[in-house]
Image (cartoon, rainbow, N blue to C red; front, side):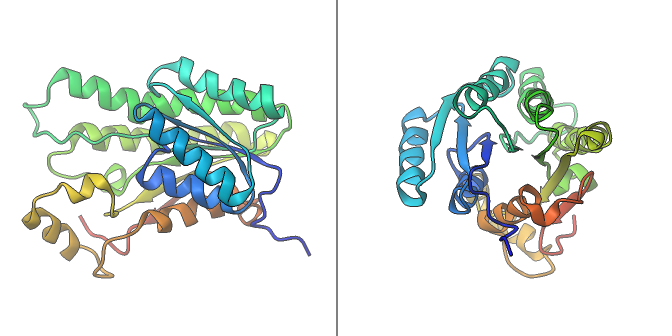
Length: 252
């Protein structure tokens, strides 16, 4: 009996893959045999080094592209790499995102534009690019990273919450439209996860967030990556239009 988690021969795009959750997702997909195309906006040397590490460790092919995910040309370039090198695309993970807090009435226009551009427009561009290529084979899995904030909101996160709620709406709409072509679209909604961004929080804020988690501990990027692996694999072959919370019972 074949292993439903075996991704051997499949091709996956992961955006925002240079660190944190994106790097964990790239690593877990590679560890299950997927060939990768990973992207990032900065740290091109770091991304290239990471790609070489994954290729050597797991015996897969890893291509790299650097570009701003808010620009549609970046998603188009990622899809072109998949087509020119592999003639296929099986998995697309819209992970790239930014967080800029700000109280209502004090959020600069530049922060609004950048947050919506990266967190929401990036997902829309990625979904369109992925769907065009996946439609050739009438199959594929698109996984979008949203947030618990996109589901329940939070003080000081008007724009971030709006962008992540938009990702949920996009996921549900795309799932309905693409289901007849056997292209699945789902989302993962992380809670409080141990990343570089979280480590910059003041101690009192960190403790406050920690106390709001039912399981009493912070989550890891690996735990988010495992959820993405499920949605990318054949284990979820009949799952689409779902938002899976990975938050340890966090209450906001």
